[in-house]
Image (cartoon, rainbow, N blue to C red):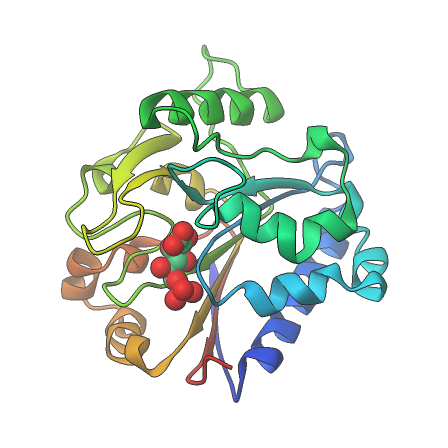
Length: 247
Ligand code: 6PG
């Protein structure tokens, strides 16, 4: 696995770089992807918004043929798809409603269901897409996952101290965000799936993340224990795109 750490002066530059990483991944992996399908998992939070807007621009959307991609989510808040806190709605509003992939390409986590049912439904969706056969020990292999970093070291909905961190088999798990979060109920991809993705791209912005980020990038065993994002690997490429500025 190759790790690259890149610093940017602002979120525009960071997002442009993320777009080019996606373009490269599409070039490199697009032709070999199973059945010519390319699976991209998105995250919520504020940092990916600028990238999503770039993806919604006609020139980018047609150059990258974004209509043909299959969209998954790294995690979801347990709310319906039209609620303002929904990670699905964020992506729909910022680019997918412009790109207009066929409905079958949108693999959302049904946050309106009770968390366990939502996790089960999402797992089944992933299994179907990746032709998972229960008799074989295969794991979903997403092409690219976009992740964020929370101030407490969380990523996707993997929070410090959560039992979901110890999951070694299930592809999807339920999780609980800290009580301060507007929506504590979560459904999240687990490490087995995240760490089996070909390419993982962290989008990190804001000075508040700096101390945590420095510890994670130093790769100490303490950081591994404290910060869920520190346990993220990828099968081939891991990118950390960092901007101190959130604008
Ligand atoms: C979510 C995210 C979460 C987020 C980080 C960073 O649904 O909240 O998936 O993991 O990516 O907390 O969020 P910011 O980009 O807002 O800092």
